[in-house]
Length: 73
Image (tube, rainbow, N blue to C red; front, side):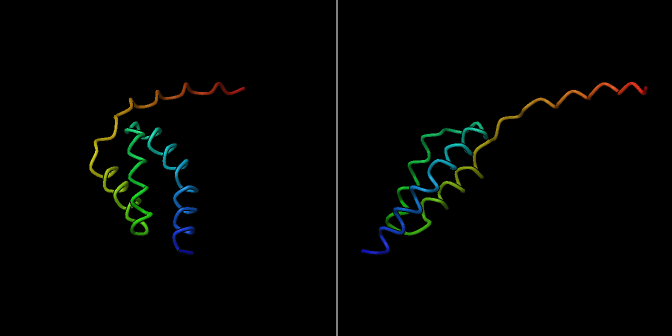
């Protein structure tokens, strides 16, 4: 039973960083729910989330414009 509490603590501590990561990548945030599989088998949910991120097409952002040349004083 002690291992369950460690797994639960690990899932809770990694939940918010995974939400932020999925938002920045432009992927579906509700996929964080697969982290709950880590309570059954440790790290299973994290591996499933990694597989999801690896198989989904990430959004293509336009290239940043080139900065204007600086004026020498």
